[in-house]
Amino acid sequence: MPADRPTESSHLAPALLILAIFVVAVLDATTSPELHISAFLGIAPLYAALRWSFRMTLLVAAVFVVCLTYVDIFTVPDWAPASRVVGIFGVILVAVFSLMLCRTRLQREALHARTRLVADTVQRAMLRELPLNAGPVEAYGFYVSAQEGARVGGDIYEAIDTPHGLRLMIGDVQGKGMPAIGAGLEVLASFREAAQHLESLDSVAERMEQALARYNTRSVEQGGDERFVTALLMEVRGPAQGRVLSCGHIPYYLVHGGEVSERREGEGGLPLGLGGLSGEPRHSVRVHPDPDDWLVLCTDGVTEARGKDGEFYPLAERLAGWTDLEPAELARTLRADLESFTDGELKDDATVLVVRRSPAAAQLSMARAAAA
Image (cartoon, rainbow, N blue to C red; front, top):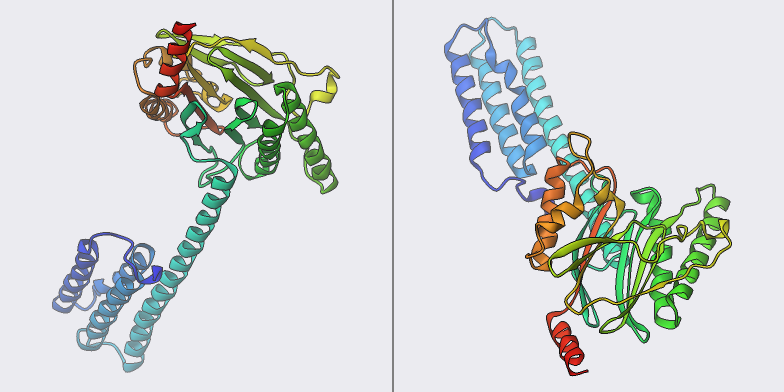
């Protein structure tokens, strides 16, 4: 049971606290009764209640009651019987309060653990765990929520193998934390469905726009806010055949031959949820990636992260120094460096995807290109 399990791996600290109670009680018993320094020991069971298991708190409280009762009865000769009763009652009251405090804390911790488990389940249903594998492509990376204690927020991503080729999406919902989850889930679900059945990437984006519009209508009817979502959609249909469509999303980065370049293909479209403002349909553009190219996709929680001096995180500069790293190692290094740069204080959700063809798929593509 959680309530009976120690919250610290070592019993040294409880043992030291119990020893301190004994030492103070002995000093009180051997010094002038006017001092009565053991009266300050009430903090001991309270500290145990905030730190350790119920059993350990019960042990500390029992030692506290025994020691203080002995001091009140045998080492304070000038006290009247009524004063002794009041003193002993106060000791017992502190011990009982400590046990109640410990039980309440453990119940809250158990509730938090269950809530965290539910949040993790929601995240796994909403966002697949990284790395992603879809057809010939693998995507490593990380997702960090800016909201303390949250595992889900306003960033979304997906990579799926479809009858129309590999399709990849990364997006950023306006806002962060819990209020952004509904809009993000709506857009993500529409992408997963439309990517499987619609022929063009443009049609996929349009279906996502329609889904978010319906969500915004419901949200306004229920007294909520309308939201927009920036998104970057990609499609790979062959060794050097791809398309890119940006719905107001930030550029991505291409790692080609050890060189890093910022790519803005497919830009110009408004974010999802705002498409009706222009009346113009979105259009994807064709790209021709080499089999051994890498892509780095991210949300603006990365590029707009600020350091202590107020400077933005230099993502392109950092990537240029890490082109020799494997994708998994690059993702770990980038996350650690971002947290160090911001001193662990991200102001927005941050997501990075390091995308490349799997080594086997890349070799096969290069062999086919050479044979052609």
